[in-house]
Every structure is written in structure tokens, then in C-alpha cells.
Amino acid sequence: MGPVSDSRAEEARLLEGCLRGENDAWKAVFKNYHPKLVAYIAVMSQGGSGEQAEEVAAAVWCALWCGASTHFGRYDPRAGGLLKYFKSLARGEIWRRRRSERSRRFRECKAARSESTRDEVGRGLVLQEFLATLTPREREFCMSILMSVSEFGGRAEVSTCNEWKLRSRVMKKFRTYMLQNN
Image 1 (tube, rainbow, N blue to C red):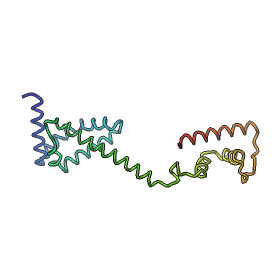
Image 2 (tube, helix red, strand yellow; image 1 turned 60 degrees about the vertical axis):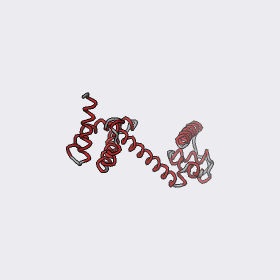
Image 3 (tube, rainbow, N blue to C red; image 1 turned 30 degrees about the vertical axis):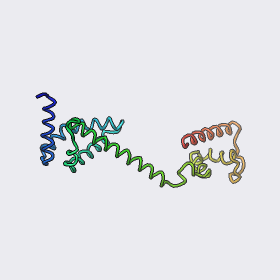
Image 4 (cartoon, rainbow, N blue to C red; image 1 turned 180 degrees about the vertical axis):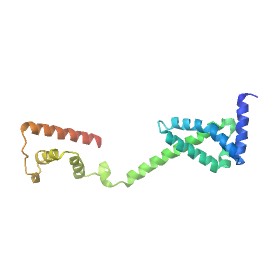
């Protein structure tokens, strides 16, 4: 008997033990396959944290423990070893989590206040948000000189040089604000 058939026989023995509910068999399966499964999940998660990989692995082990006869009943040793089967379960769990995250984001966007949706935002709200990013002096300059709002006392007293500096800063902040929010 070669090493592949020995490992298949060992996997079959462990599988039977798990189906009978033997703790030693579960411990051996977990000890043999958990580190490899976590490493695989970390790679599949594309840079996800080790904690996320552990969570996915825990979900796989929980599903196996709770539905051992169902899950192990679907296992086909001819298709590959137990590790390959565990990896397929992990891929399914990763896919379910990604789909759930996409659905959650979609629901949140749909339920978000109309003011927070860019297409529905009134110009007044955008202007108020932008003015909140300015310093008090820049805000006064913007309102009194650039926008000519009369309640700010007409033109603020600023020198030509200072006016140029304030205008440059306000316009730079405006461009940055608009680029970040588009």
C-alpha cells in the first residue's frame, strides 16, 4: 500500500469516527486540518485578517459538527481528500459572507437618508458641508467676497495680498472637497 492509500484509509477511519460522534476522531481531524484550512482561507480572503480566516474556519467546523451526517454524506473520497472537501466548504462560506456583505451595503444605501445620496443632495446642503470644512476667517471671506452674501457686511477688509491668499486657499479646499465627494 502506498502513502496515498494509507492517508485515504486514515481519512476514512477518522470520518467514520466523526460520524459515530467520537471526540478523539473530531480532535484528530481538527488537529490535522485546521491549520491548513485557516492558511487556505487567509489566501482566499485576499489579504483578510487572520481573525477573519479563523471566523470562516469556525463556521466550517460548526457546520460540520452540527450536520456531520449531511456534510460527510456529500464527501466523495474519489474527488479528493478531506482537506480538499473542507476547502470547498470554506469557499462556500466565504462566498456567503461576501454576498451577505454586498446585500447589507445595498440595503444600507437604499435606506440612507436622501440627503446623503449625492444625486439627491441639494446645493444648499453641499454648500453648508463645504463651509464647515473652512476656518472661520476663510468662511467669512468666502461668504462676504466670493459669494457676496450681504448679511456678512459686504466686503471684508482684507489687503490685496491677503485676499489672493484666502481666495487660493478656499478654491483649493473647494476643489479637494468636490473631488472627494464625487
